[in-house]
Length: 199
Image (cartoon, rainbow, N blue to C red; front, top):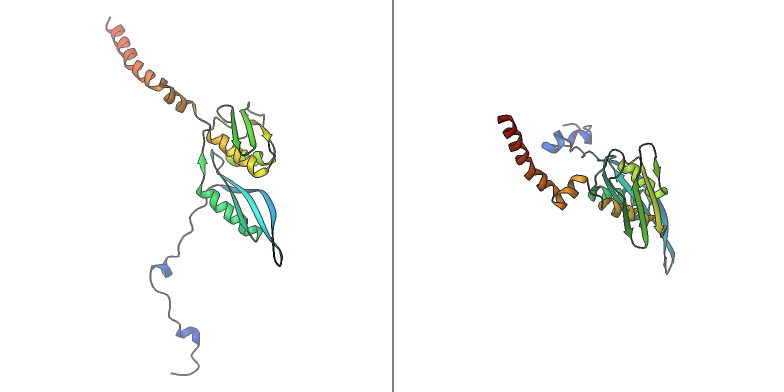
């Protein structure tokens, strides 16, 4: 065997399923939007250590949304952390057309957000952070007002708490027992209709 053999030729080829079928990455659900990025500083013996805090919202545009905060020494790492956490903790809420079903107030810390359904064509009447949450969730007509603290993190989380409180008409009917009453009346109505036909 000659000494001119290249090292690359001596390397064994990878065998098995991993080599033949590369692992497919799972499809990411929804679109992420960076709401706020802040630089933080920690004073230590040698000076200051700077870091970054990113607030990110992830939404699929049809009533599913997630919000999270990520911290790291680099902006991109902080955003990636926040996005990953937001995707893992997404919530769903009812949507009527392109607005919310009813008026609601969400509270988080010293911030409160009031929101109310609006007629088609009204648009999103809300502040910067709250507006981005609505756009990610797919809500196009809504009235919102921030009350109390204007801290961007607290405002966004207050908006999320308000969306958690939303209930659809069907859910409210079940809670009030109206759905059961309607089902009980249905057989009676059918019996009356059959009796009328027999006569």
